[in-house]
Image (cartoon, rainbow, N blue to C red; front, side, top):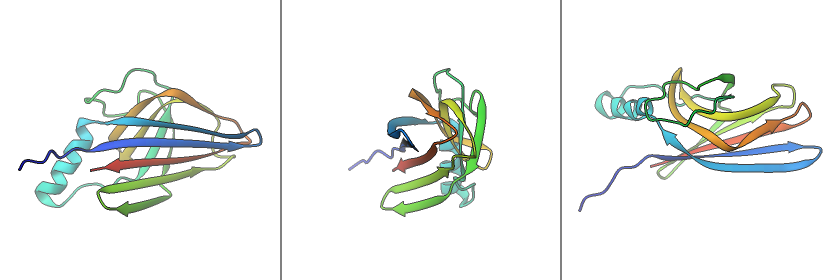
Length: 140
């Protein structure tokens, strides 16, 4: 029996502030560089760990050949990783004082290597009195 090996991801963003809670969820594209990271790990047992999430203002559709966000304006190291059967869940908390703005793209990085990218169907708008919680899950 043949089994397909797929890597899929999904970003959940929760904005929390005085006006309530807004939630966005969207699937993403694992770019070629991200797939090559997995290849290198399988080949030699070495590679970079997923380590940060970036946000930006780019609007060009995500493509397999992407190596960076189109217009990165914020990035931060992942706060926590939760490993379970066939899944890595990367969590990031952004406090009220860290950043404000409207973000239309997001990326998951291993060091400086882009692993995954998406253009948000609904941009994340974060005001100075709001915090942002991101969960980026990668399923195998």
